[in-house]
Image 1: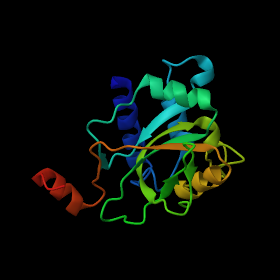
Image 2: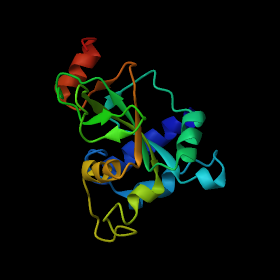
Image 3: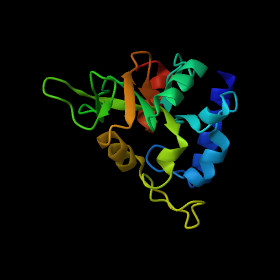
Image 4: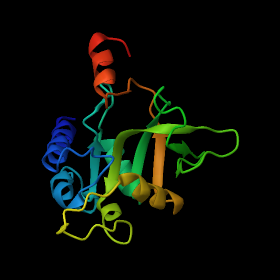
Length: 184
């Protein structure tokens, strides 16, 4: 789990270096991907990496080797952890299908959940035809992540699961102050 913490810290540092853009709002695969392959996995699985946003609090989430191996074996492009909707995002982002696939829209009688900003990704998601950022990102393009995920979800290439552990989006000074004061 230490390796996952180092990866999350590296992603946060890359986000800051890239101009302070929120990682899940903007992507820069040319900077991040070379640092994020998991060397503890078999060579064919090394194109899989964890990403966790730096502005969330999920102290009990486990970044396990087993989850990465299951994801690598799945052939999917991404695996998202969804959470029950917080007050600031009551409509959620994605739904969860009964088959474990992420859905852009909730089926009748279901709800959408909020993307926790914790995910496993496969390198191929950040390459053509999925990602339009040029290899090596010579133009320094910052592209939104949501359209990329929605495209892969529509094609059935994204799995998801509901995480019910402690999770707080501390993406605003007010929410960070509430967390620090113990009022979540």
